[in-house]
Length: 453
Image 1 (cartoon, rainbow, N blue to C red):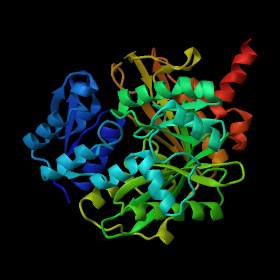
Image 2: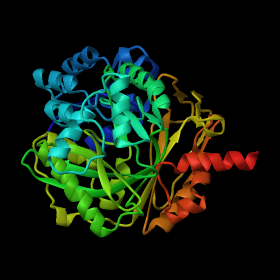
Image 3: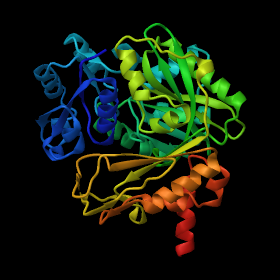
Image 4: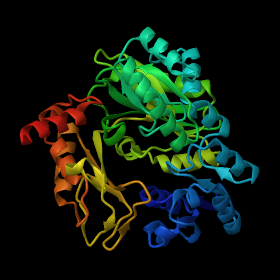
């Protein structure tokens, strides 16, 4: 096992990793930007080192700064968390060359599954169902139009190296396709340093279902059931739950087997998530793989009782997964609400600023992953996520009730947050019935707008 790990991230995920390391008896090193000098991950780590200015490019995305910090503090390994450098194969290679373990998959795994077009091709060869579309980059508008007409509108343009909804545009005709192609390419270049985009058939009102896997260095792979991530806005997830109200045991088995097959195809090692779209007739299609721990991993931890961060660290240290597929049981239901510093009444505008008053929720069935405290300054330089509240109950109805209670107790002032949005969401009749899709939030907000008019 490692003796010291550097955490190349910030916020709640950095704290989450520190806690797992402490329970494993591993010392931790926090890195921080000048804007994060007073953050909790800096306070709770065994050591901390400043790596640059507030801008991510000068700190959390600076490979030389992070490697220098790792060498100065003499760590065995680096945990990248999620975002930033977590899916950067070049960073993983540099860690390897410096004889520092990268806690995650191999650089080759990241390359194979990080490029969405390459991943689609590999999964198609492996026999997984994929959404109709291209497996190579669109070169020009003529090729885009030809492709779109062949597979039929609507289509969606996607960044080959993308994620988080960046470089994605839905198109319903030739005109919107041409106007959105260049925008998507420019956005992909700005966010990922890669302007390549491809085109897929756009599936109307699907569910976004993902399967969590664990794979060790000895070829042992298990899945830990599914998460339903359909509640999203502009391709950014807002609420996740496990299990999905749309997935029965038979479908769960098929999805799990497909996810394991996908991982075996690329000799995958570490935690990972295989993402699918599920249509109204329960046909599912491979969408992409996330080669890192996910923001929404706590819901899987709650229903399986398995600590994914600890397992990820153990796998990186060369340990075997100590349980088999038959040992994994889904216990009850868990829901996670992402609390962002955003004003949902004003088109989800980010609301950075100082927290002057803070009341945290608690009680049976609630978990809170957060890095905020009274007096904490929410920076405009980073993602607006300030907390994840996770409820766990015997069934979906009970879990919703626990979450509703938790949201009522949670107060962050004077910062505007998405707490009120989640309260409205969890009381919506369609959500209560589990009748949701990736369009649900958009439809809910349109309903609200009509009522106000």
